[in-house]
Image (cartoon, rainbow, N blue to C red; front, side):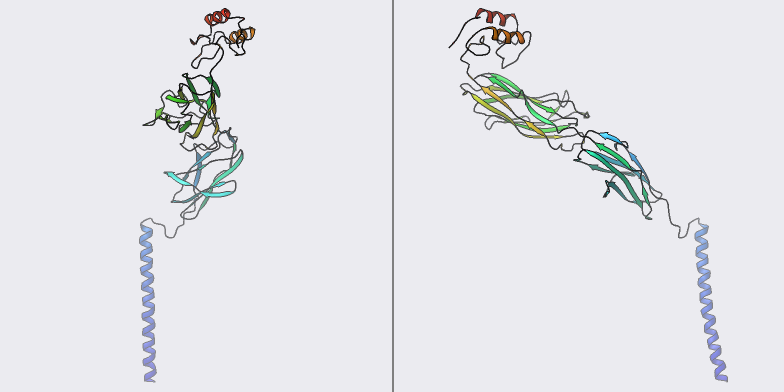
Length: 349
């Protein structure tokens, strides 16, 4: 019996020690919680507010129609905690947007075909709360691709003539801020005297250092230009550069190409404009067998020549002078009429 009572006493002491430890642990925990609550902190609280999403410029207005083949979607996303992910849902496909500033995310959609596009924005925070924007649409009705062409498309010249061609650009509704255009020609027939920036990029375009690059051996002229200041959208059509040539002495008769071998243009955001159409030109060198007062070169000075001169009477001209400016003084006037009259009725073989 004595042995049994001793074992019971030991067991009771162990239980008492265990309960005392648990009770002390609970008191300690309550003390910590009390301290935290006294400091104003929330224990275990979860932030449940989803991110707030707002479209900002230059995002097009809902339901708008644009005449370019690209669009920038820009949004402001704010949240009480940190923003984790921002997604653009474009026509049902999600893609990650790029953070471009404080609370600002953006993505560019380029090379868009004509048609209507639907989009919205998803955003979540570090508590995995998801927010969603309104659904928007934009209708793309882009103009035709820009055209770079030789103007005039064709002209007649003679040996030793000086003439000018323009590299003309029709932006077709797009903005043009900068670019590089190379023109090729037959160096055995003609040489470039100068290449001067035109009016497409404003009144004072910036010419790249070392340009224009004129190569009268291989027959190329390269012009690299940039606009000074803001780019108007759309940019009005205009002249990229005016190139002045002189026909070589003794150049053989024939028709020769003046071609645009490369044309790169960038829009107002300095992104390459795709799909540029090129239209080349020609120059015909010919030695006339007929005097200039036989304007249509048919061997007779008659009513047809008089009619051609009359159709152009009062015009001003430039090199190479057209045949109706008989005396090549830059004006179609009474002097040309007098010369034609003096030879009226003559024939030539």
